[in-house]
Length: 133
Image (cartoon, rainbow, N blue to C red; front, side):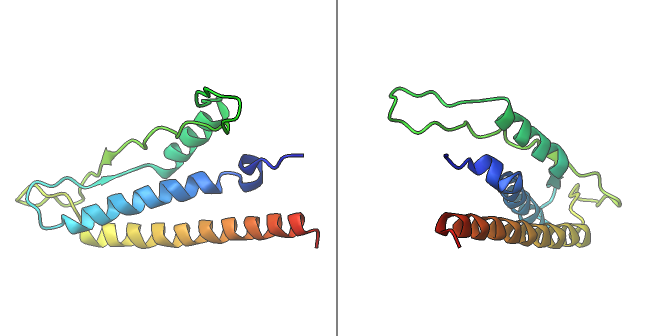
């Protein structure tokens, strides 16, 4: 019986990719904290995860030109970037609040590590099942 990684890993693999993308966006916001006119951006994690899981379950199969090809799925849509509404606008038009961005980055990093631990335990369980221990 073949192992389906989608059923074995659940949503954690998709969540890890979205968390990584969100970390990049938040780091970009922090890097541009002093750039005049820069608009802080973020993604809605729940919406992005639901879109990613819906695209995988809707059967977006990749085109196969040979029966020997491995069947896979096309990657889900890119999460929608949204602009952050500043709590206190600055005179130069920059909407990055460094304290808010640092807190969001730290929370995202913690959740990324948690998702990695979930995936690690899933792989450990699969390895034990394959070995038969």
